Length: 90
Image (cartoon, rainbow, N blue to C red; front, side, top):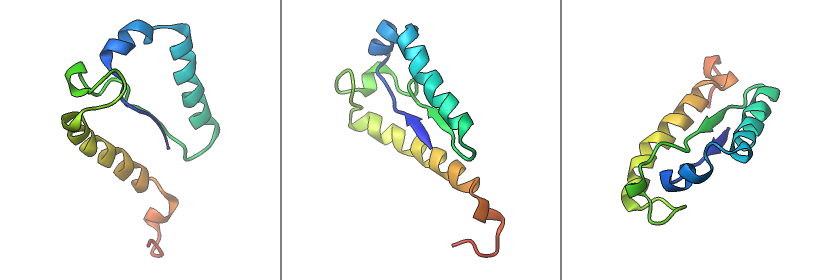
């Protein structure tokens, strides 16, 4: 799994529509498509600006909000593992 972590909307306003950032996300989408079983999850826009301590790091409240998001992402990924349908699942 490839995860693009949350980014402050204040930063995304500056470069979110840039060719650089589009290419960055496209690279990871393409990489995920190239390797079966790999998924790219873009969480760049899941938090509002007030949930960041600074332009890069979620605050305590932001981290609490992110916990369930990451749980859902990991749970979904685990549900797609080949052994899920097997009697030999751990």
